[in-house]
Image 1 (cartoon, one colour):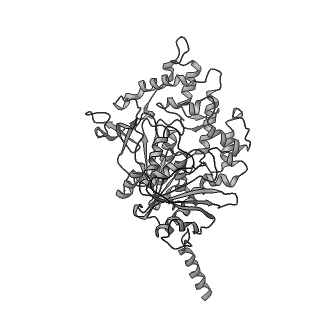
Image 2 (spheres, rainbow, N blue to C red):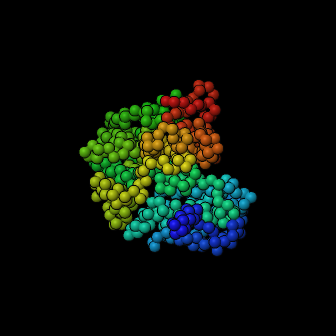
Image 3 (cartoon, rainbow, N blue to C red):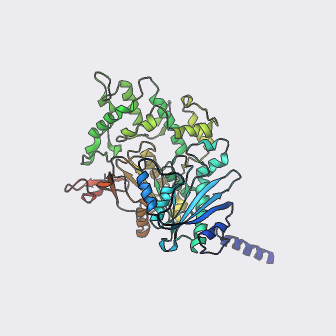
Length: 514
């Protein structure tokens, strides 16, 4: 009897131990003192205080957003920068960085940030944005360096790291570092990511429902491996005949024709198609009646355009995926329908399915999609719609997606949202999950729509008021100046013009049912 009682006591003691660990140094240590922090299956490689405005990323910011990113770094307060390498498997080499504002500037919360594409880099800009807002933040390279799928060749454990393990391990270790530095764990843990980052957030809700209290998932690449396959299938269809390919210089004519057909359906002609699913645009209106030039389409090209705007099906007629592109996204068709298939998707076949870096995408067969899904076995695909464990804990999932996204289909998010609701029940809408579609926005940002909005603030508002926002303020910026504002509405509603005032001011719109 004594042995049984002792066994019960031991079991209770095990249950009482937190799933992270007790830091091996005193809570509330200095930044540099974190270098001696003992973490299981991890090594702290650096811990240093970064003075205000002095941070320089390993690789200077480039491209159109370089100036804005540089300004973001210049605004950084003093913070503690902790670098670590995580090794949950014998082949893991996961790099993470935890950024910790000084105690007086910390809001008591964690905001973990996501990646794009095949990851392979720390998301410094997103880290800076979170710290500037008062959050402790963390990012990972997901276990490899470089933005291609080459890391997967012969390294199944690294594929698991990329698929889900790196983000979970990062989150557990970040919470422990926060506890050691501030003397307390974060009171709230948030996720913020788009594209791959959106998939990462939803995967966390699927696999590790206790990691985060609330998640922002933009343009989430759930069903990701299936998406890789249908992208290649569509690109093959685009090139099935010598004259079926639509050259990019014809995209403006296609876009203008789509706007002429559907822009005004919402009552406002503003260069944006509010809800493309209501648009009945037929590319045949552009059929060449004489010389073939950039203002018209050949008969074969009309067929291609129609195929791009319809669901992807097998030769036998089985639907594999909803439409990859919707009216309004024509200016970005080259991503899926360009001269070559999207390299992001080609890499999935090269390095995960065929284990051959020289695999030729022109040999792709639609039956290879089944092989891709079988090889992945759910590691990256992230298709589960069972989020009930996450919701039962009070978890909130805020999804958003641009209707004009030419890379991750807008209907992918719509379908996922609807299937989650089917599993969880209609009562989950607005309490546990909400989707906001963004008219005219491209992939995560860009386009003629109002693509600038504070997703994390909307999530915070949701948690504070126990209901998803009835509208989210969004703006369009040109040359650094706001030139249009609109409300983003919960899925199923749209921004309806009240009939008075400027159509470029959100105050003159209300969210209404279709």
